[in-house]
Amino acid sequence: LEGIMFALDEFNKPRSDKIGLLIRDTKKDVNQIKKIKEEFTLLNSIIAILGPIFSNEVRATLEEFDDYDIPIISPTATDDDLTGLNHYFFQANPSFTVRGKIMAQYVFYVENKRTVSVINSIEGYSPILAASFITEFENLGGRILRRESFKDDNTDFSEPISKIYS
Image 1 (cartoon, rainbow, N blue to C red):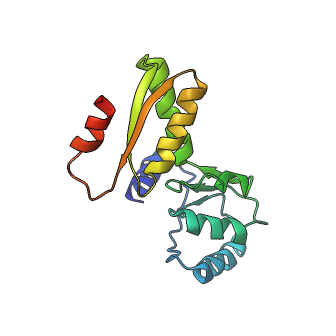
Image 2: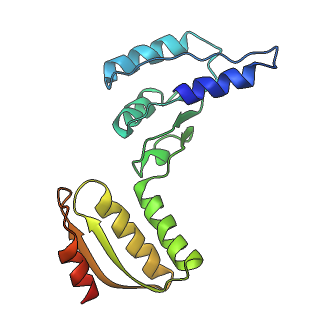
């Protein structure tokens, strides 16, 4: 938010026609999102919505603003299906599936690796990244020698690494 406010201030400094910023907190509450929509529909000067930041809030916002034809841009939401829910929605942060694909393309094309092993946590978004990486890497013609995983609270990686080396 501070970065957006700074960028807007810099953009407005030399201009006579300023752009304003309305800041509203969804409070992770669908009822609050509905109140914000009610307020915004009374204003004809809204040209875009930046946020919300969490995927579940974005999903609720896209449903609530379905008939509101202005761009909605989330800087941080990561769920894969969000861009398909509303043709005015833009995801500034790639989904975890897309990130996995990009990492695979980097390793294959830039690092020129054709055979790799994958180690990942079994918790959080790590399995999604690893699965997407593996699928894309193999689709590119690469080969996965071994896949090992660990729990997030693990600090000793000697076991999964030794399995990869063996």
